[in-house]
Image 1 (cartoon, rainbow, N blue to C red):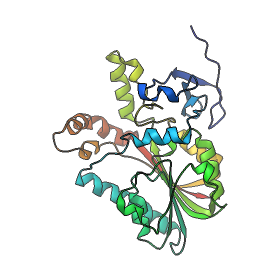
Image 2: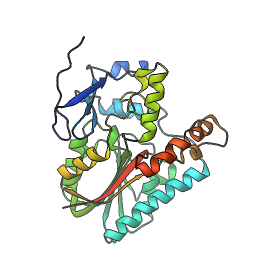
Image 3: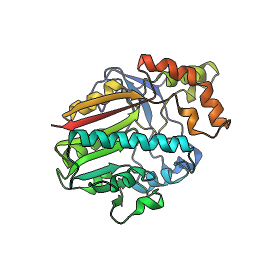
Length: 302
């Protein structure tokens, strides 16, 4: 039996970690893999992570996300839901700070819908992503967009008033360094919006149990670094708040949300619609337990 050496948790430096398996590698990405990776769960701060650090090149990361990562079509309900979520965040930003002439950065822009919304306000709009998947409207010349890695961009210190990062931190190989960099480029009293999946979600525990009962234990892990959707890190409420505390961010608002409406993302009676509709009871039970699928925070740099 293989002996697994203790590994320090990147978030809390704890060494009471549980080895949970080796990530499976899709054939099309085998050539990218130069190390033997292992997945761990920190028993102290409840963080899921991969060790050693993943060392893909910027081009390799870009290739992974360029190959069908983003959905080509959305239901009208889902388009409207996403718009309302973006509007909610901008209203919260405006509640805690003035908008006039301030600098806004989105890290991991995807199709660029948030950039479009921000570009219609008084804010100066900036965006960065490892690949360019923006829709046409997001390619407005007034938007300062760059393809690249935040850690290599070297933005000016304390330049931004707002930083927005939705569904990104779980994808980066070095979230601690990312948070350090965000702290550096964000002004004092600047605001950060951060959203990540909740690894303590009831639906993930339910799916894991189903996989184990059906003899598919290798599929039970809820995050898979080299399989879509390429989740390298897994955050619970505890590990997320610990990471923010380490970087001296004060949380103004924490929310646990999402999951129950997954079936509405798909066309009526499609495979995705039926599959997620059947899981609706699990999502409903998760609401009072505060174990919904996603979590986000608005926090301020002190």
